[in-house]
Length: 356
Image 1 (cartoon, helix red, strand yellow):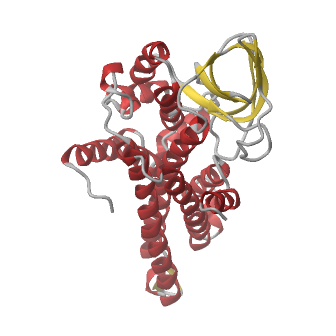
Image 2 (cartoon, helix red, strand yellow):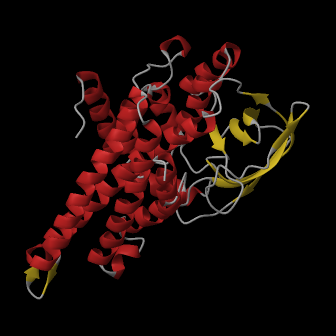
């Protein structure tokens, strides 16, 4: 585990306490039952903003705390444990695009709004059925952006889109030229196809040619942090179930074959934590961040896929019923595994980064 300073420990503990007491899985069930296209509770997000979580990576001069990416990951991990629905991950990733590539005017306009919750931002990158930032056809002419983004997280609640075009990243406010088509996925969260039709666009001119990759790496490590929290929750829930469930007049946890399975999962979970925390620290330190972020997301994909599968297997068929929570984690896991890079895509990227 990463060595945390006192400030980070306090932030993690505060996030853990709030998630358990104010945003348990019953709150996710309420959001799901509401049928809201935004798919998150505005009041709950306002509390997150009040606690400073929307500004963890934003510089102090723009209303943030500038605690860094490991600190942001600690918060996201705790929210992942209870499947708290919020735009925090995408808002933070979008804020990083403005920090890395924005002008002083763009930073002054948007960063205080994102830190204060006055505005919510998201990323709009992928145009095909899977993640591939090399395949971008969206274009800008005369300050007007036109293109289709096939899969945008948290689009319904967003006020600002950070949009990948052929020649860079652009800021596009939600307006008449931004058309959303809702995509219903298994995790019951906000996803949409977004069509930009001559939408006013403001380019992020800083950050160099690596800007898109740098922003996506930050989205990857935060997504991996959410997945880490989910994996830990599934492991803990499944272990508790095995300690309580009786079959053949024996508690399931006493069966050696099941003990072996849980031991393997615990080892995987520990390895996942190391990879995710290393990715967050690499982004903070600015050293080999691309490779570390790629490893973090690939390992998160692998381990959460295995743990969510085994969670269902060890619960039995009842695990996929609405009565039990564990099935919700599997549904969310499958969406996150495909977000910002599948395992295969990430392996190819790591090979390319390593010169193969």
